[in-house]
Image 1 (cartoon, each protein chain N blue to C red):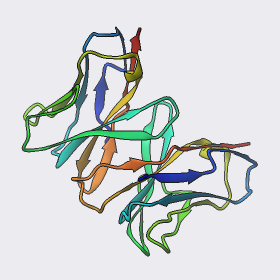
Image 2 (image 1 turned 45 degrees about the vertical axis):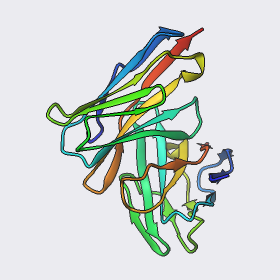
Image 3 (image 1 turned 180 degrees about the horizontal axis):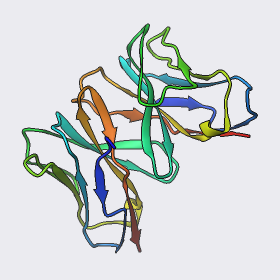
Image 4 (image 1 turned 135 degrees about the vertical axis):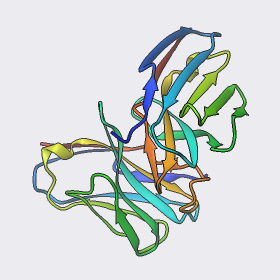
Amino acid sequence: SQQGEEDPQALSIQEGENATMNCSYKTSINNLQWYRQNSGRGLVHLILIRSNEREKHSGRLRVTLDTSKKSSSLLITASRAADTASYFCARAQGGKLIFGQGTELSVKP
Amino acid sequence: EAQVTQNPRYLITVTGKKLTVTCSQNMNHEYMSWYRQDPGLGLRQIYYSMNVEVTDKGDVPEGYKVSRKEKRNFPLILESPSPNQTSLYFCASRKNRDYEYGYTFGSGTRLTVV
């Protein structure tokens, strides 16, 4: 499959805890993007990290990229119930944007 | 407000009855795309368009048609829908073909073909 691997598939945490989601891929990329999807709704673009970047921050989000290991992680700090959603990585490679299967995050109040 | 608007949000139809799902964006984006989302299969690209009158097949184009006569609109046409096209469909756009820009997604169209 061209799609990357995301893990875990599902994650349940308490409000205030940090959530980490991982994304791995097999071939070289131009950039890697993270999206959030609330149940049944459209995806929302969160952050983009270029292949020559190692770390990027946006508010409570921190994304890392390790091109040698072909992996990326998304960290959400001090999670809130409103962060409950599915999170997808999408990698730009070979003229395509390929989405992973997603991680379902549940944040309990 | 910058957005991608899809219609309808929900649609139940019968096998073989032609239908069109509309998509419109107000951001003057050059690049538009259609995806379908299915459990266990994730998001798969159906068709995309790099600009007006330029369209190309994605990963799962069979059974679908598109057109791009105007920059803002990118309708998805199912000439003869079948039950295996039951899915959640998303239209998305971005500034241009450059992957340095993220997608803006529509709210989705949940299609059921019986």
